[in-house]
Image (cartoon, rainbow, N blue to C red; front, top):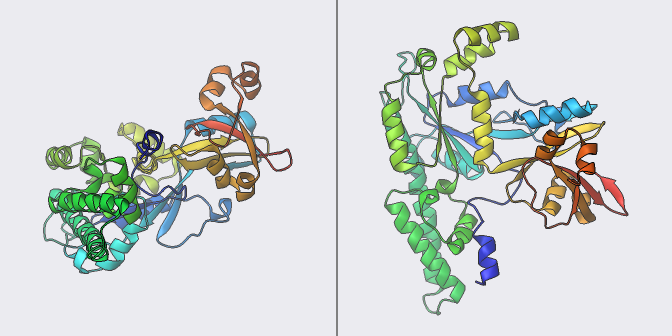
Length: 391
């Protein structure tokens, strides 16, 4: 690998490079996973705003709150307003033995493969009317059950790949590339068999490039959602908090943790706006749904760029480190095919100088080529085709 190429791949993160990404809700039965999905469903963006988006009962598309976008809408007062969105999938509940097909294990694991990040929903509340599948409530056990099932499936997939490679090269010497792949697979298998998730290992650029092709379950980013009672949520106390924090620190220190209460969220969702505002003020609290959405967005490595004008202000979602030409393709394939350049200034400059005109006068609007790396908050005007400017 050349020094130039190494510098490039050092920045390659886990996951697929696609800009069309989604996050899946994963959890044991009766932990509040589907109730969380239903709460998010109440925030769903109308399908007519996204004519190419397929909506089905197991998927919802929710708006990602962004004060920058709201400020741009105030500035332009456009006819059409389209915010950034997060695609969320409700995945079948998991039970111990899912990696061997128990319960809905096969569907569960297949659906996790189809998402790019995970909301891991666990339960830290006791309710005699809601039985836990394992008989009693223990969020640490739930963490370990799900992690173990994902690890077991990854062991199976990595092991199969290694076996196939060894059979292929049994009578023929491995090529240099096959040798590198074999070392990566052996290292990954050892890591998994030690009970560790792929995303928490130490990997070189070659390792990441190849393992990304396997779409492993334990390589996906995770946001932990711990469902507690309404009483615990309002008091900010729960007997499991200390153990949960210790477990995450020891096993998944980079994962985000969000305590929330399905019961509380359902209660305020049913109130009219005025009553909701009064209730939240009296209890000195707020909904966690916006935080859950924004953390899911960040876990997917998503950023926003904006297109603005009197007809439409829109936030476009791309993965971090996307270049200008692929960003243009998110808007329309023809813009990318006939890409000329992109006139760009950042929202930070807009906020400082107050208008697009002022940004232009200050020299903050610059033309960039197809290899420009789009930054979060960029406001972009794409020029394409026969000198025609498109947004």
